[in-house]
Image (cartoon, rainbow, N blue to C red):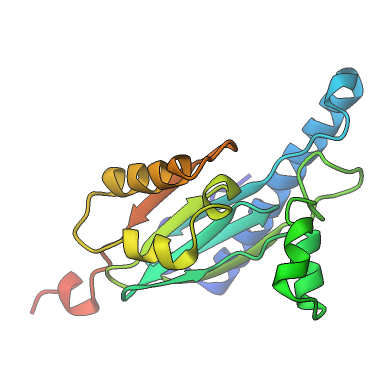
Length: 198
């Protein structure tokens, strides 16, 4: 199967191919986990999440299943890129108060290996800007650290490793018992003027 080309700007056909490839890989993982559950009865009812990003030049592509999250940090503000696949999110979207829905927060509506059939992969993309950061994290972080606290921690100038350690430390200091995984990528996107000297 042909791999996606590596130009600085992807055309729409290449973007569609990459989105389809993301979904195909997620479905393969889902089927492999279902097969494993059949031979290992002790894993019945278990599933996992997937939140991944692939960048080509200024294009960022996301694949998402479950309640781990991807965030975009731009200009001092943080924006959640993914939407949680949980009962709580569905209840909030249907009008229930967040304070009432929070007790359903860890009931997944979509996961890899969690149910038969297929896993529904959210795949979308957007363009990065110079100075953007992308943060991928598990709910072990977001259950205990607010979006505002994450944004304050992702200050410009800090080393990515130090910022990840600070976020993990904040969650653990608050009694974190769940897996706290954090990955941070920072981007320098050259302008057209930068890439073509006069």
